[in-house]
Image 1: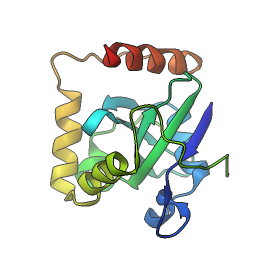
Image 2: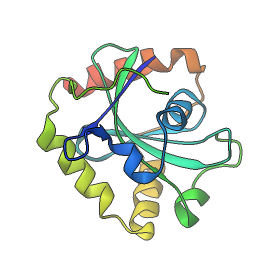
Image 3: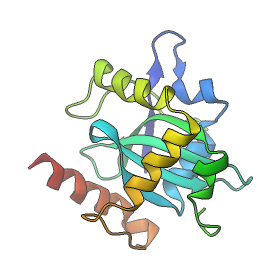
Image 4: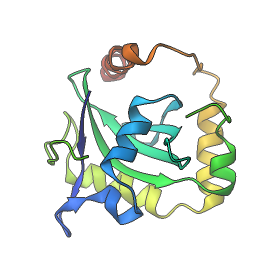
Length: 159
């Protein structure tokens, strides 16, 4: 899967670096086991654990290509946010700001502003609300099918 990272125009570096994370860690969570949930303003959040034991929340947008995603930001989960994950949930690629269809700098900045201003309690509440949505079900699927499922969800959301 191709994973592109949002490049912060003020630093010319991937935004995830501002949170002490590497592209390798974010990629590991996006491709690994964990919860994949709807998030704010049409984005998605993937919750998972790195091989070194860090629990991350990755905010991303699926691209039109089912084998590609655009990672906006990521945070290490602590306290209540980390507690939302079950115990079993578990560098550098081409980086550019070629935004997915329907996305632009302003929309990415709005998503960033939302997540950057969250307290630990607000982070926990959003994850908990996403997990409890009555119109959403959680199901385990083989990791190799994840790109196709993401593409299907993106197509359905466009309608």
